[in-house]
Image (tube, rainbow, N blue to C red):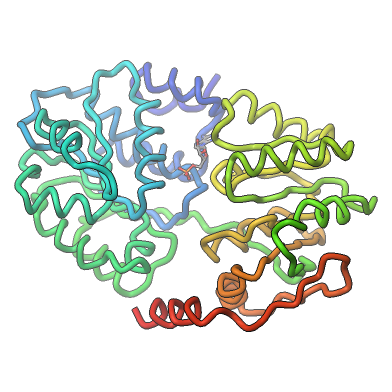
Length: 397
Ligand code: AMP
């Protein structure tokens, strides 16, 4: 029986969660869900990948779904503020899945797309609004949204908001919210600014810290291969020809990219499958199970799909594309060298990746050795001037 049943969640939510294939709650869900159903404020020190979206959204959906009311026009009963469009749509997608059948009104708003459709949805009144800061402020300024009916506020990825320069916008938004509300703050790290904010906006919060998995970086033999983009597949095949790799996890940037790599591997008689959000949960689970059972030697995944992957004995991680967020590098390579074992991590870098590669090296506090003794090695000139300037600017913020 699903352990989700032990929470006092609406039956339909428990059904939706089982349909998603969740068998038991993650540690953050175990701690968050009862506290949030109770109406407590919450400080969650946790990063994406821990199951935090369900941890906060299941109780919100539950509480709003149990107590349905007529919502004021241009108002929302709950607000989830998150830094990027991708996170916003991902959260909305999850919420719509979990809340299916409950008749709650939900909407996601972010910039870079037309606003009229967003204004029209908010005009009818919402139960749940997921938003990025810029577009929300814009909607506040034009009087298209008010927070008179707000019951719950979630500030997601607070430290990323700070890193991306959205902190002032976030503070402006918070100043418009009613004081009497339930507030949840999630952050992967707690820089001083976030601590001060947490003190100011949370009342007697439940505190939950899910420590990031400890990656023993010293046990991972890291290297980087400089090459032309067109040589990535040949280099990959060349590396995988060596017999010592039992289980290889390859990270790439896009879903089509993952499928193309799988095709190339299969053409070379290497058993492989892709794992990405374009596949159904059932197909993803099957691929993962086959990989775990060693029926597949290679799994090709995108960052989003690979979150939470916990497979023993991965001997090699390959970054076919470098992670766009340097913090994901350690998370990716930490898939090998688990439980005190050693492992290898190989990254492919094309000339345009050099600035990103330097940020990754900075984030792990060490250089990654370049393998020059390989058939596709390319010598790069110094990093392009434009990219250098960008890094300086970001560091100043
Ligand atoms: P998040 O940290 O919210 O981004 O979630 C990371 C991934 O874990 C998402 O793909 C979720 O669908 C998945 N997930 C969340 N909760 C569970 C659970 N209890 N069991 C299995 N997968 C889960």
